[in-house]
Length: 137
Length: 68
Image (tube, rainbow over the protein chains, first blue to last red):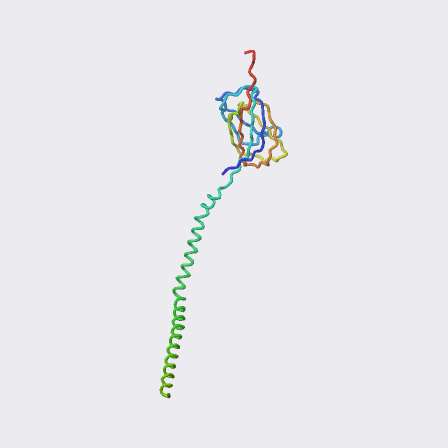
């Protein structure tokens, strides 16, 4: 995307004729006559005659990088990073599969098992007490 | 008359110019000047490598010779 900043506008008068087939050079001079730009020339679209008034507009062309293009440029890199990150996570998951699940499994099994065993023991005691009570009663 | 664009050129600056320095516009065919020099001070600083665009418009025609 381009943005133009107007630097100046001048009006000048032709002191000679120019045909459409001739290369008209445009000079931006500074001080005693030093040229400040690369060569600029063009063939005028219309013939110019002595006395014609010419308006010259000078602009600075500023190129603004398109944010969308920047994102597009960044995306592949990010995607790679993301993939790497995912791969890293997967690695962790895999390592977790190897190690943690066993612990988790043992833990849950043990806990659940203990609870169940305890419940079962309590039930048996209750029934025993109940039966004892019945016996005593 | 309505302004008619007669040409547009672009070039890169080969030197730095500050806003207090005066630039002059000149039109030439080979080494022959074809217009009066017109000075101006740029509204912004220019750096070497900056791209400038110059648009030329014909805004008035020379008065026609009444004798002819």
